[in-house]
Amino acid sequence: MGPRVAIAERGRPLGSPLSVWLNFRVVPFLVAGLSKLWSYTLRVKREGFEAVEDLVARDERFILCFWHRRLVMMPLAYPFHRRVKGVAILSSDSRDGERSAATWRWFGIHAVRGTASDDGAKALVRMIQAVKQGWDFGITPDGPRGPNMSLKPGVTALARKTGAWVVPVSLAFDRHFELRTWDRMVMPLPFSTCTIKYGQPYRIPPKAEDAAEGLRLQQVMNELEGWAEGISHG
Image 1 (cartoon, one colour):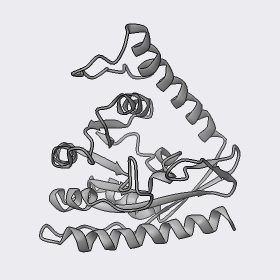
Image 2 (spheres, helix red, strand yellow):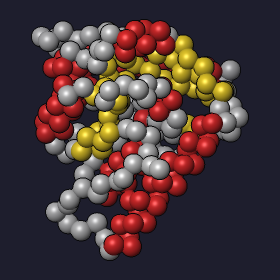
Image 3 (cartoon, one colour):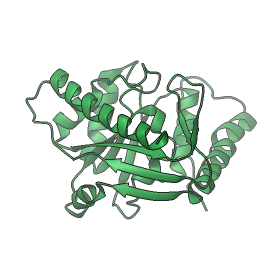
Image 4 (cartoon, helix red, strand yellow):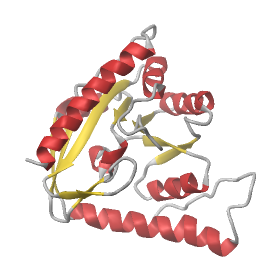
């Protein structure tokens, strides 16, 4: 049986009891179930995974960084289900964020509530608290609304203030299609091969400049995106 979804309290109502049940219980259950079934058809390969396994073996916290367009099937990049805590993401306090958080719970992914674009300082504090409590983190530095593949500074500040390792990651499918969304979301075709590639983990020193570190991470993530495009169109 799946986890009980706790609907967060809001300053405004989320809708009628029927609407809440449909939008925040039934829809997340169906979306998560379909996504899991879809993932079971894929052949999964991993590159550079040994370094991440070593971090887990040493009980080190880390931050998976990936572009929003690679979000679908990204839970496959974190196969550490026996981790004491697990992985967390940032999810907004909006209705869409509530639905997203309810969906990710079916994957065992914890949602830290807040919106970096609306109240970045508060969201950063919550993320720092989560990492210090033992959670790893998954971040799309260009989410939730873009610009596409343009890195925002929150991830470097999070890594710098917590000492967590930065792990850039991307994934590619040998057969896929793209949605007409702001990020050109990549969707795999059933029974395709999913290759997940991890960049070399690294730490950001406490006194490092976020701007310089952001450029460094942007370059690495762009290189991974180029690799993924090569797989997808090779």
